[in-house]
Image (cartoon, rainbow, N blue to C red):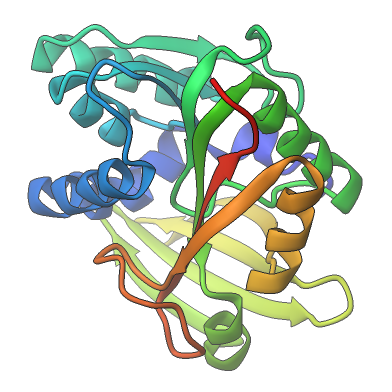
Length: 251
């Protein structure tokens, strides 16, 4: 299960989330939140870390930013390149591992991680991701990390659930390890009544204070912690948690 992410983000994953991620108004609001929170001038170079099918990267490029998207999934990157082509924008999409970014030091004015795409590894490797974000962000640059609110996840996790996703029926068993702060999900995916796939994933969740402390040690000052894509204040009942931080120093 350690490397669950290597084969997780494939055609089945995309089919399950396709309706959720293709809503134009939702994409616009999420991208506006990224743009507003980072507060970078037009033309800034921004890295979309774990960009998936590129829905935010393409929107930011349409608004005049120089955007690079990185993801491990070649399948999702091909979808991202097609999305950019259809929207007539130039976005550089790169296949790679977020623990070892193929970019120069201080290359980006801003970096963001959205849709709970941070926390896929053990604590040591998650720290490598943060260190790489720090390395490629210029002094004075901005970062944003967004995920589900862990306090709400702990309280609202359903042990067993199911839902329909396009052609598939998805059965889920979920549990939370309070010692490691990991939420686990075991999925069984059925097509026409037949089990076609079974996969387990986990996400390491961080409290507001915990990740803020880690970012501070890597040279960032946390400017604000938001609770949703409308950039409302964060609290126990917030749907999301969004850290916005500035790297110390002058660009």
